[in-house]
Length: 232
Image 1 (cartoon, rainbow, N blue to C red):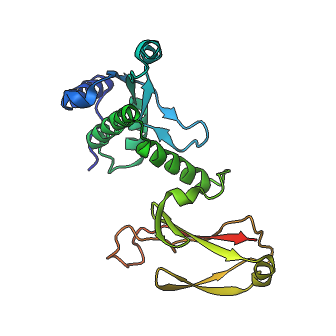
Image 2 (image 1 turned 120 degrees about the vertical axis):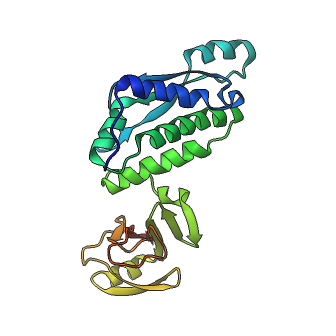
């Protein structure tokens, strides 16, 4: 049975309580945790919502003029986005997601102070993956920011991206034919369309990683396999 969604006031109070439970040294420079009523959607992908953001405080710019090192942030949370996700996913745990979102945004603040960008890179990879799955433009080689499992093989979430280096003549010769690839010790048959474009990524649905590696049942959640020709 899905958990009830708290009203805005209860949600806001819970957000403040979670923030107050975080050790003060991690909150140094975090001016406020602000809860907005609105649902915030991605400006590019209409089915992707934003739960929270870490924004540089307007005060930070003024303080940097004095000492050059100040990093101050405001954490924004979007109540409407939580409600939207909870309404579409019966298993959505609002409280757990709220805590995870607050901790995630504060981690952004900590990394900004340290001058590192691990979470920012993760968020960029998530956005690029979402754009790719929505058939929107993505930078060449974006998937290489994922986990490298073998030379030319990268995992992004459950999707596998396999680079296939080919000379132009080899690529043309493969059009409309099947090719057997060895991917992570498994043999996979891939067929390129007769009108295959060398700039195209070819997808085998369900050929990626399983959510549970020990569950090989037909209904086990699985990613897709994407063949990326590198034609020279």
